[in-house]
Length: 375
Image: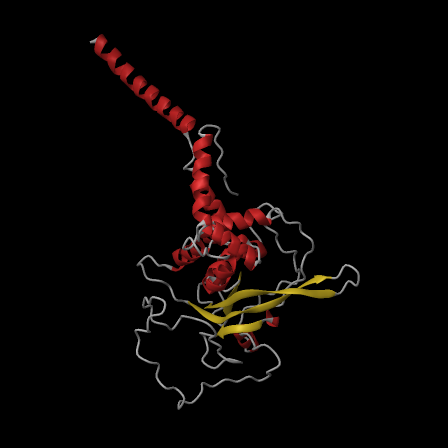
């Protein structure tokens, strides 16, 4: 849900305000060499990944156009891209994606030093000092130490022709993982076609979190792990954190066979928790899953922990409240839209409030005056 402002009065002022925006957007750059869509694609990959995930439309060039038109304002860019998505025809429905087909660009396993397969750091700033450096200036840190003489980290690629085994499967093989397999295989919930109802199925919760505003989802995750003493509960450990490319297939209209029509980048995470609360099987672990479009590990991690919590506490009041938070408050377009509409004229609404307040004050004064006359 979103809101768009309309006003019959002040049309010339509104048009002038829009002209200012268009004039500045057209001059976006140094006035001589404006910033191009290609430059945005090349220099802002993480911002575009987040934008495409929240708009739920994988098209890097369209995302760059929206980013440029919104002058880098992500909520506005999401609004533009989501609005454009609503005009596109649904030509086909893709086949279910198998995450194990991923072409890895990055893979870390915080829970285990030597998992099956490599720890592939990929492109990351996780281990980098946050020091501001202007383009073209030297690195303020000392030169990197010579690591050539060190022994390489141990890796155990048991079958190089297949993706590394997930850490959750390592737990399952040892009888340590809770079985959450659902034989019914229900049809996934489609948020673009179905109304949200509570209690929501797991597919609806995952879909809502996948298109949630990243900062809002992280805030909800942090709120749920923060204890009354202000310290975070670190009872959850991350298994696999992955980023890579997955093939997208659709059924060929003539042959009926699945055909690869493209690839999409995703980030995914498995959150692992020991079942140590009352009524739980303390000999087992449970796993939550999160997958986000593009390179957005923050969303995937918070999503996996929230998925785990939603399952563990589904039968309690806390679980119901968590579902409501996920389904009703994490969509950035809806929340930003409601906030933005507060800036539109509310003259009639507020005038009626003023009239009621004045009338209530007069009624309060009238009994006091009558009481004075009686005496």
